[in-house]
Image (cartoon, rainbow, N blue to C red; front, side, top):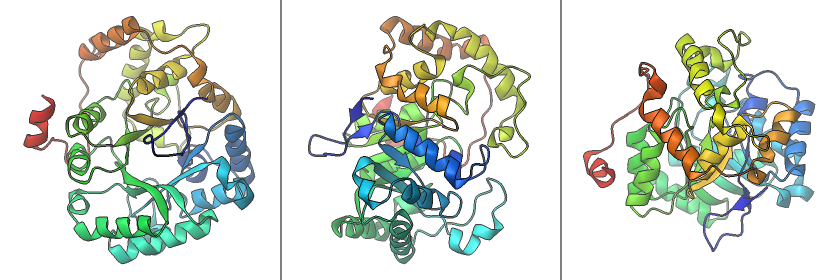
Length: 349
């Protein structure tokens, strides 16, 4: 495993591959007992993974409680804890239906209360990376929200702060404006070789505005597609989140993967190559694959040791993406603002 840092002044060793707890705590990617989840998390740590990314709304607090079970206070220094706040699951969690979004509350009082509650569930006195969960434009422009974040940081409640974007791919308007105006330490967003919009533009905005922002990348395998194991006949379990994808995503995705088989080598799997593509960007802080078994942990944790993509491979990927892999371009449905503000668009054009 290799490690990255926020900057030269930070002593946090953040593993290039992290562990996102949504797979083991929400029931959207199979059901796991607490014991099964803890075993997977400890196996990941034994293989060098330090970053564990939770959210207070994942399982209505369950992801944070699992972290506390897996790594009690005596082992706190082994891991880097990232979590998210902003959803009012305390008042609305019982009404959650699948992945349907519940109301948010970003008032200063609610955020302070959410952070204090998260610390108790985590069994720690500080969060390493605190993210505002799926913010909208109103929160980007809410000075009171950002002031309470600074207050919480100064009180030692968290070390690095930022935002997580979603739940659909992006929210480029909100993300880009937040990067340019607030210059957060970290932005978490969906980004992968097959789904580069709008993630690539967010990275360009950070570069153009000289923001210190680093990125946590989730869904790096396009919901498993880039692991290279699906076929056109693959069927997902009834409650699996992948059923929310259109059938065309599966059919066209398999066709795209066949054109990417050149990335596979005896010393590098398709899944590892997909993450190496993301790690080629120095602003990528860590990649958060969906982990749900021990074999995956072993494969993904070894990514840092595999050969980086060559310039020739990167060029071939760019050509395939530019041509839509020779397929009809797909129409994506996004939530939130999907246009860059004009002043930011001009910076990266």
